[in-house]
Amino acid sequence: MTPGGTPAYLPERPRGAALADEGRLPPERVALVDLLDRLLAGGVVITGDIVLSIADVDLVRISLRALLGSVRGTEPFDPLGEPYAEGGRATDIRGGRRESEDDRW
Amino acid sequence: MRDHHPAMSENHPALSQNHPGVGQGVYLYAVTPAGENGTAGASVERAERPPDLRGVMGGVVRPVPRGGLVAHVSDVPLDRFGEEPLRRSLEDLDWVEGVARAHHRVVEALAAAGPTAPVRLVTVYTGEEQVRDLLDLRHDDFTEILSRVAGRREWGVKAYLRRDTPPPSPAPAATAAGGGDSPGMAYLRRKKESLRGREDLWRAAAERAELLHAELGQIAVASRRHRPQDPQLSGRSESMVLNGAYLVDPAREEEFAAVLGGYRDRFLDVELTGPWAPYSFTSIDLGAGRAGGVR
Image (cartoon, rainbow over all chains, first blue to last red):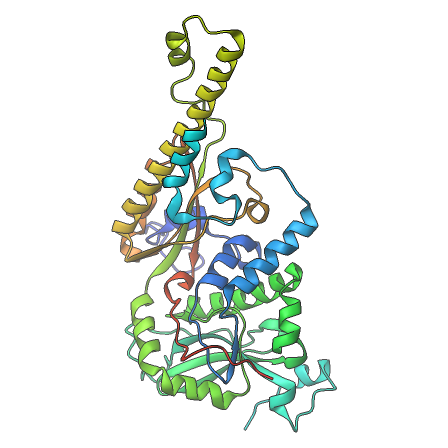
């Protein structure tokens, strides 16, 4: 028996351990950007007269972007990343924009 | 009846306890089923949450039970969380980070104990009575959300285009086609080819990411895509081609991990985050209209 009382020969491997090993970080070390994805675009949204909420996510997005822009200055961004340079278009990664650029070349 | 915390009042002596609606707001973190009495519909048993859980600005988190649900709240001063101060504070990334991490810490602790429906960052009520009204009014919505996420965990998968990958078809096409071009023309053509190469690479990576998302989505109970992250926030300059979130049954987590392994190739760099509380799968708008704001 181990000190914890679990027989040592039992596989002490909960389901999903492979995933957890890889992804798990203590809350303090979770990347802010991953957290903000979830906190600003996830969670139950409650709006109404008696509540103050960030229903207007754009307000936050714009504020943060403005902040980052002013702090970091203008850093040249690789053209490969261009489709997302203006704030991301998840639905457009294979879309028409690329085609029109091809025309120019 | 309001439950004031001595610590909060000490930190903000100016706040009048006689006018709680003016001085303090009630910050809502998450809603859970009431575990102990077994009144809620959730099938998963709730462990005890940590007794001394502290949230935003160090406020003590307390339960507000109602009709088989529990709202988890703490007091916040409205001179910081009122509409106008908030508008200014949201310009301050450090401030946002502090609130986000405090919010997350509370949600994590609750989620570790059982099914949890996190609420959007910065949801502030004028008092506990309003929180109880919410639980009354939205009882069925919360119960449904909680039963959907019960026993499941959210995982994040981010895929980046591998920058160091050589283009799939380098020079041959260029040399084969080029007959008697002038040096200038040849240069332009080579440049065009190289851009095409990068285009092809990008396209191939994006297609792989689509496949990855689809395959993960088949294993997950639910899946969702977040916007690709701003390189300045993520600290990675490579193009993010997938920023996915997946709600996965524990029984299928091994399978989920196996799929990820299959997509780490010359096109994609795949990153896993989590397990997360089910933030991405509780984003339901329970509002009747525009946020009125606390004034």
